[in-house]
Image 1: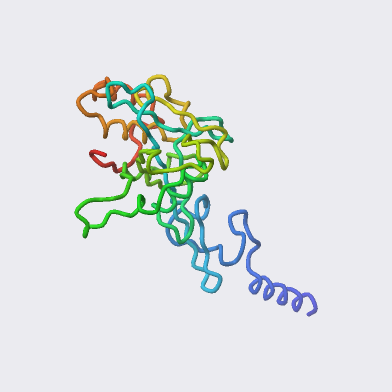
Image 2 (image 1 turned 90 degrees about the horizontal axis):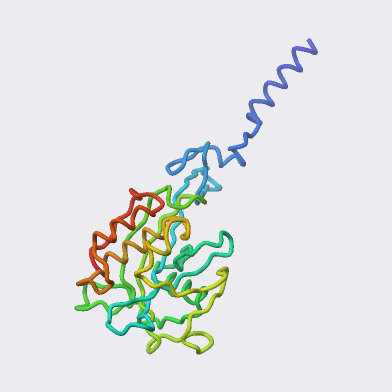
Length: 255
């Protein structure tokens, strides 16, 4: 009788407590997932409601900025430098950028990240989003495209909104007043890379993640009458150095 009673108590306790947590189940509200990554491979931005146990994983949102300016040796016009940062973790070159904070627009994220990584201060009036009520877009930022391929960054699934921004010292200042971009935040250095050399001298693993794809898309968008000394055929040959030739993205036709 005692043995039967003990077994009955243990069965009731097991029913109440439930199964032991697995490696993929950290808390009770972490058990049921709705959308995003399956529970066995939860990686990304995951959120769980504390009351209803509704859990969801979604991609992180980031911005990438192709910051460019006229080359110092631009005697014929149409020659540009791209300001790239060297990452502190991998040592690779990368576009300027980072994650969008909660409550922040992508435009404000561009303004913040550019200042944090290069010291360049962008006036508020130059990041006003384009409005259909305005005859002309006053923003200094131009949309390159949206990059959403889950393979593009090996850290997690990150969707990036990429912008082009021309650095104009006459309307933008730097923190130190030098009018020269300088490394800040987690960047080791900021260097000027000739746009025409991207995909030729600076290619493949020189660039972090799919940033070469972003830069070549930008390069294609501003090609105009051969001012870069290159045509679309030259550009197509440079694409063999991309991380993935079929990286998923939606891009604009022209800057």
